[in-house]
Image (cartoon, rainbow, N blue to C red; front, side, top):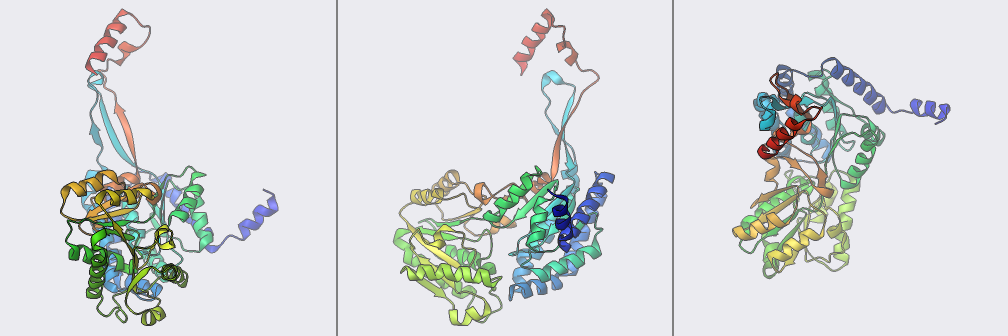
Length: 482
């Protein structure tokens, strides 16, 4: 690279990129000075984060509401603040056990030596948070990284600028920059963030952007956890309680107006009850949101671009003659940047709504002739982030569990596996790689270092050269006991 070009690029660096470089250097130096924070230091950081979330919840709720245009304070409380606090409390309560070296069995012929796995902090962890749950998906992985003893830098989404500033302000007041910091900025900062040689990088977002993040991180051989998305199916077995399944699916689809990575993306229903399934979901939606056109309970779409994309998906289905049922009035909702819950019944499979992740309140409902057909349909596509199954038939349930691969599963409900802090959360294949939450998050952000403690009574030298007849007898004995 010519010197003048390099100079131009340095002088054109954005404020966010400059701040990122400063914070990364600061945290790398802090790690080098204190590479193994004590239990007390880690527990103090977790307690500090809990106090921050509790003390400023009203600020966070107001900022998220303003960024979306409208989102219920209860959705933010339930799906973001309470989830993040619960994760931090679980980590704090289990931290001593997680940090403890884990003894593993040592083969008989190596005794009395000992083998252990000793968790060790990685160093500096980067977290790229998305816009759909911008608080929870920033702080929940930060909990795991801090518990593991790392320094952490978070890059929030540029689509939630008000929340980003509140996060930056509150974190700066509560934490030393060497421990936890927020860096804000646009696309350029995001690109620079992915290119920074973190000791681990976690990205939550779309598969297409996740692929670019992984490519950028690979140049530094930075380990990456990718939390992506995909077309998560809801399978209604013929043995299901249809009304209960419909209520669960409607809730999972309409929470945050469907802008949830694990929202039911489409429904597979028994062919002979397709219309009844659509009616049941529509009725459930009306019960959940009886004043959908005017209520603040129902969230807006995050931006004009995303709103236009969703309208285009619905319009394409309408133009192709698909059967559509809307819950809510477009005339009333569109000016609020909201969409009706739009049920598309038995759509052609080449529609955009069946080829890409919906990420909004549009729900295709497809007929299947059997449980085998449902499994076959799921397996034709990429592996989803979540799968939901409804029914009472244990054999049919286990067939779906055994023969499909997804990041996580909830049986007879939607979304709830994500709220279980003791279950790892992550994707598989195109829906992501790696996992966090609970102890799984601690492991993700630790180097689980294997250590062998040799005994002063070790007999391993008997296998050293020069080899003799005794060596052969000892080898024969070892082969018998291994």
